[in-house]
Each structure stands twice: as C-alpha cells, then as structure tokens.
Figure 1 (tube, rainbow, N blue to C red):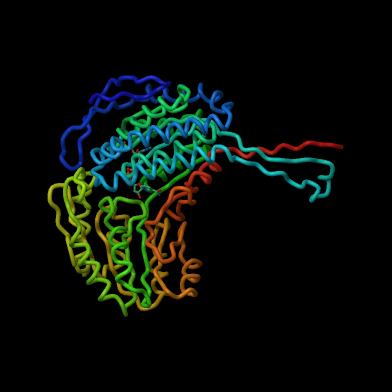
Figure 2: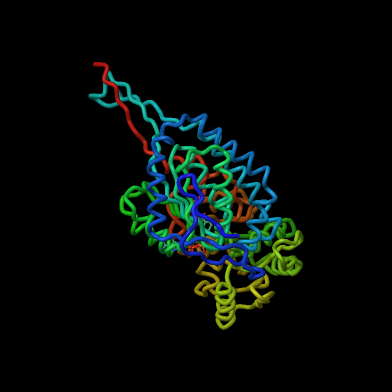
Length: 473
Ligand code: NAP
C-alpha cells in the first residue's frame, strides 16, 4: 500500500505521503510519497551518472531491454489494466485496450532503437566542398525529463520512456498525481528487464515541486510534457534552451457531409465522444453536420448514446464511469448551464450522480460558449448544423487548438480540400479525430503543442544531429 520512489535502481521511502483515492469509489488505494526538491535532485543526479552507460550501450542491447519490457508487460497485462482502471476510473475494457497499445508502443521502440540512421551528404554540390566526405549521426541528448498526464497513465508514459531509452538517453519521470501507480509498475518491469540503474528514475509528488525542479535544472536536456496548455506554456517559458516537446489539449471536431450514410458512422462517433468519459486529448467534442442529414444524425446519435452503460470501471460492461475529480464534475455542470443560458439545447444528459457525469449531447451551441471553444475533457459533445463545407472548415479552424480533425464525405474533392484547409496536426478522412495508432506522427498546432510523438518522430526530437566531415584533399 505504501509506495516508494524509484531512484538509481533502488526503491526509496519518502518523508511525506499522500493518500491516493479511486475517483469512482473514493476509497484509498495507496499511499504515495511526495518528493521534495532533495529527492528530485537525487533522481537527476542518478540519471546524470547513468548517461555514459546508456550512451555507450549498443543498439541491439537497448532493443533487447525494450523487448524484455514488452514480454514482461504481456505477462502482467491483466494486472496492468486493473491498475489503470482503479487509479484513473477507466472502464476496464478501455484499460485493457490501453495496455495492448502500451505493448505495441514499446515494440515500436525496440524496433526503432535499431534504425537510428544518419545520411551522407554530397558536399561537392557546393563550390569549395570538393574532396570531402560528410555524414550525419544522431547522438542521445542526455537526460529526458518526462511529465505525464492522468488520462493514459501507461501508454503516454510509454511514448516518452520508449523513445528515450531507444535513443540511449536516461530519464526522470514524473507521473500525474492521480495516476502514479502505472508508472511505479513500469519501474518494476524495467528493473526486471535489465535496465542499468539510474537509467530511469521515477519521482512522484506535486507538479509544482517536481515539475518545476526538473524543468529548470541545467543537467536536464529535454523536457517532454503531455498535459494541459496552461502548464505546458509555463514549462516552455521556464525551460531556457532545453529541448521542449509539448503534447497539449484540444477541442477536436468532425465534419459530416450530406452524402454520407449516417448509420455507418454513428457508433464510431459515439465512441469518439464518450470513450474514457471524454477525457482523451483527441476526444470528439464538436460535430458539424450538413443540414440535409442533421436531423437524422442527431436522432440516431442520441438514441445510441442513451444506451451507454454507466457504472463501476472494474465492471466489464461499463462504458462510462467517474470523471477524474469532483471539481471536473462541477466545472462540466457549470459549462452545461452556461450553454443552456446561451440558447443551446441539451438533448441528453446534463446531470451527474456521484462523480459520474451522464453522457451529454448539446445541440446548436454558439462557438463562443465554453463547451465549444474550450477543451471540455468530459462526456459532452456538441452537434451543430452547417450549410456548406466552407462554413464547416471555418468552425473547425476557429479554435485556439489544432490537434486532429476528421471529415466524413464521399466526395474525393471535398476530402482533398479539407485536408488542405483544416489547420491541425492530422486530418482523418472518413474517420473521427480520435483515431490514433502508436507509430504515426502525432501532435498539434497552435495551443495543441510543439513537436511530434510516434516513436520514430520522438527519437528525432530526443537526439542531436551531428555532422562529421572528412577532408580527403
Ligand atoms: P495537467 O494538469 O496539465 O497535468 C499534467 C502533468 O503536469 C501532471 O503530471 C502534473 O502533475 C504536471 N504539472 C502540474 N503543474 C505543473 C507545473 N507547474 N510544472 C510542471 N508540471 C506540472 O494535465 P492533466 O489534467 O493530467 O491531463 C489532461 C490534459 O492533458 C488535457 O488538456 C489533455 O488534452 C492533455 N493531453 C494531451 C495529449 C496529447 O498527446 N496532446 C494526450 C493526453 C492528454 P500533478 O498531477 O501533480 O498536478
């Protein structure tokens, strides 16, 4: 029950502890050590000492450690899913899917560890470059500080730990305060996988204390952060010349054209809107439907949403469970109230029981309302009528965010036009914006962040390009 930090290959007790409660049952599930600056300093020191070992480790060995991690995670997959379900209130079927994806992410990392290539350059393309041979290599940057959110406590950690180790870096990991157990579990697995001591250090505690120290410490070379824009922007402002990767929020949208067969896309849209209670960075928050099919879309969407099962995250049939905190329930209810006062219609939901907010469908919400222009991060979706695709692109782009967007259309020219006009990191043709597999480049524009995840792309961000020139003259 009483957990420990993982520093320099050792499990270390903290001086201060805080109870960790399940968001659904509100029972205490563990006691979590709260790091002070001193423990964070020890973790950075351990990561600093391990740098040379990791940088010198051959690629096949880094890959082998990651392959061991894959095997160990597979062996303990059921336990892993239960940890996620308990600490995050993630419905168990969704938690199992996260564990499957985590395994895939580490597999990609093991593979990518073996193909970190450079290139040769024809220097004689420039006058004065004759008689020279040039090539590039990619070198590890050193210490990667990883700060992670609560919503995918295993797979989003994997998106930082996997590429950092694949590239030969060392890590100080600070998981979200609500979901530290998944990261501590990873520490156990990496210890058993044969990772040298100090190559990963896991410090739990408040974002302000731990996050502040690892963001500002000179020994750290990269800060990779996934979380809310406000915290991400603060990190970027404090990080100085460190490399910073930011995966931030969004209010993702999908467009539905008039020629689309509505029945075929409803269940996918419902899943995109309500999976893990809408607490997914690419959750479907805004749906813009052509007026010719609007009524039938709304009718079928509301009908399917009303069938979602609400309850205990550990129950195998549960679709929707508790929000991460009581505050989020209250915030969501206030935003729904604002939408009603602003003339929008609540077609379904709009109420809460305990920490569970019922799946909520809002129609014809003005784009200035919080449920539209801010990230709701709750089981709330808007469905608005549009008259033309041009109007839809404007609505989608009228956002501080730009992570991913989707469009359903049978017209290839409209699809091409949308792929050009939507200002986001990824456009999904004939799919919801919520689509993600773990090797694709993933990240946003505007307040959705900086840099890309997806193992190969993260490795580029976590390595330094070095040029070597041989003079044969
Ligand atoms: P959050 O509140 O921003 O927290 C994220 C992490 O930052 C936590 O570990 C948190 O620690 C830490 N933190 C808090 N204050 C800090 C500070 N001053 N300095 C450094 N670190 C600090 O986000 P969240 O509520 O966990 O996650 C939800 C957000 O993440 C949403 O906006 C969502 O869209 C975004 N997200 C984005 C992606 C993506 O790939 N683009 C994926 C998933 C989630 P504590 O927990 O101790 O406060």
